[in-house]
Structures are given as C-alpha cells and as structure tokens.
Image 1 (tube, rainbow, N blue to C red):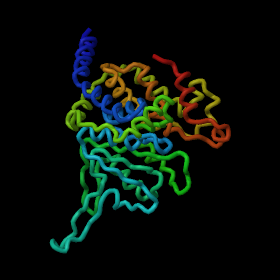
Image 2: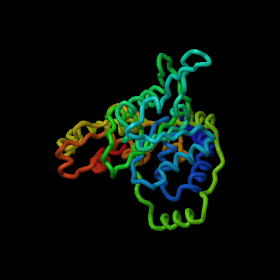
Image 3: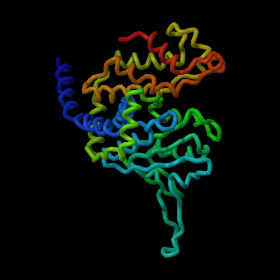
Image 4: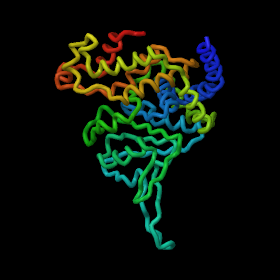
Length: 331
C-alpha cells in the first residue's frame, strides 16, 4: 500500500514538473512539421542526459530541430560543421599567445555550450572525433595542461548523411556507443510536405520564445531519476540486451550467425534511462513494458554489429531488434 501511495505522489509531482514538456512540444510543432518521433527523442535525450545521433537524408529539419529546442530553453547553442580539414582545436579550442599579456591564453571552442550540433559528424577524421569524445563522456575538455568543465546541461546532437559515403570516416564503435540514441528520420507524409511548402513559400518561419530554463530541465532530470522501475521491467531490459549477445539462449538460433557483437552494458543503462524519460513524457511515475519497446530500436540500432553473412542476406539491425522484441517474454 505504501508503494502505491508513493507512486501516486510521484505521479502528482510529475504532473506538475512535466508542464514544460507540453510547452516544448507545442513550440517545436510550430516550427517543425510532423517529425513527432524526432521531437520525442530530443526530449528523451534532454531529460536523461544522453547524446543523440541523427541519421537522415538532407533537408529533413535535423538542424532546425535542435536550433528550435535551444531557443525554447533559453540556452547556449553552437553549430559545428564537420569537414575533412577540421582540426581538434576548431572544436574544443586552443592556446593563443597574447603579446599584450606576454603569455599563452586559452581560447575556448564552440563545444562550450549547452547544445552542440555536430553537423555531418562522419565527415571529420578520427582525431577530431576523439576530441569530441572526452567532452561527450567526461563533460570536460583538456586544452594544453588545463582541464575545463562543461555546462551541467550539455547535449551533443550529431547528424550523419546515410547516402553520400565518399569522403566520410565511419565513426569508431567506442564513439557510436556513447550516443544514447540513434534516430533514423524518414520523409514526411504528403500532407506534411504540402504544409512545409506552404509555410516556406509564405515567408519566414514562426519565431519561438523561451518557454523554460536550463535550471528547470535539471530539476526535471532529478524527478525522472525517481521514476519507478519494477524488478520485472529490469529483467525485461536485461533480457532484451542479452538476446542481442546470446540469441540462441532466447530461441533465436537463426540470429546467432547474423550478430558479430551485441549491446554493451551501456545499452542496458541507456534503455533503462530512456524508458524512464519516456514514462515522464507520458506523465507516468512508473515504467511499463510499452515504454521499453517504444524506445528499444533507437537505443539498440547502433549497438549491434552485423556479420558479413547478415549483410549478404540484407538483414538489418532493425529487423534483428524487432525479432528480439517479439520473442523476449513481456512481463
């Protein structure tokens, strides 16, 4: 009974704390036509302190989405266009000699912001990507012999174009794993397309004003951490991730030769955190299996390595995840 009261209290707190979610989504909807899933995943990343990798063809409002989110939160936003000639100093900053002071001074790079858009991240060489890695994982940047902390609210949203692969550098597995979610964006529907045409030929896009603050987001994160996850849900999350490593244990022998490697413990952590954030967005103080299923593809699609056999048979990580979700017993 005590637990039921706690959940009721938590639901009430979430109802109060999550009011800004409605303001954020309606603000995003004013600028972004359709792309409901993109908006939801941006909020999940924001509330569970995770970075997001977006994959989609050019022109699907990837850049516009994070720019709008930063405007709605009244936060610092920087965009870095990744190119093959980019240097680590262009991202994190460098030491500059001041003749006036007669000493070296630190000039901070664009990574010092609340929201960082790493546009076409796979166009930059490994050295630049590894410079971004420390800031994503440790929330700090080392320039010369000094280490600088990044803002507490720090979100990297990276985009990559799946079509043009010339002059691109595949992201190292270690870096891909540090993105909490990999979201694949598809084309809008025909009605959405007509609305996009109408809005763009009419003139400027709607302007948005800040509806919340960084402090309010950080406060909401502490409430998200209290969202209740039952032991059965924990077991369900662990089973899904284990099925990506040992499919034969879950009656999926046919997948054994398709998977080179499965999700790491970071996959389990991300799946639990993202499920909590999803429950919070849905104004609930507890996680249900549907929350896990709703977010499983985004958390796992970049964490499953495919064998040559899978590629030859045109089997994708999407199909593998779908088969695992359909097979693993729901609590």
